[in-house]
Length: 305
Ligand code: NAP
Image (tube, rainbow, N blue to C red; front, side):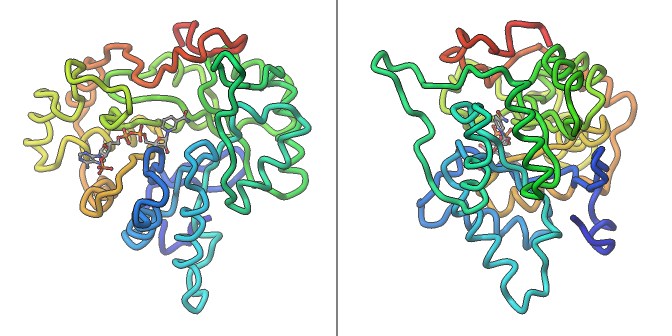
């Protein structure tokens, strides 16, 4: 996935499949498609800065633009290889029926747009209620066929992770969950034997339902103080905290200067005291908890972790 040359500038983790996953990737949720190529530009900026990990999902509705950026970046003389870039995508919740899994994967692979939120007459989303163990078997077939190199989980709680491990032929390589200093996920981290990827690693200030009375992680005075001492930005301190905990992170940005600074987190080290201080900021506060979905039989967030 990443060449030896790139390894010098990247901290990476090795997945149970043997592949290397860079510990900082670019998030692409809310990077709206079509806005004069905003996502495409963000991905190109990131690749040119040295990112080699892009986090996508069919549900973000912009995979086609991510694909266009990858094609542009790879094409000149084919000097750069697609294999250098670790790309994550996610099977959406309407596609859990084993019969739908391969087609959904192929759709993502060809970067086609599709309807992500088909609704019933009462407005609820037609999520699949197939058991996730059955979905996993179909995802394992994607590995067998060589369509994907590794498969993982997202938003699985500890019990659900164990359910999968108890049946898996191909173990989950990653569990991607919400994680930041206000939701430090210490229990889940201890429980997961796979790599954990932190989504919303900076506290997702641009989440559509954020309200002004909710605290803004990146403006937390404790964080500003630490950042000042290390001559870094609060965002860089948070990303460094994730890395020192061994957690992969995928900060989203469409701002070139931030895309750049979010990768500049390998040249300093937080002291054990500052790591402890940041752990103490935990509020067990889930920012991305979609109550719309809480009646689903496998809704993961009723358990504490
Ligand atoms: P996030 O990365 O925590 O925060 C994004 C926000 O932070 C944006 O408003 C961005 O602004 C701003 N930002 C980025 N770098 C900054 C910096 N250096 N200084 C100040 N502000 C900065 O939020 P997220 O998008 O929720 O999470 C990241 C990625 O995780 C997503 O994009 C997606 O790929 C993934 N995700 C996965 C799931 C899942 O269920 N698996 C759920 C949520 C998210 P600008 O863009 O304007 O620069």
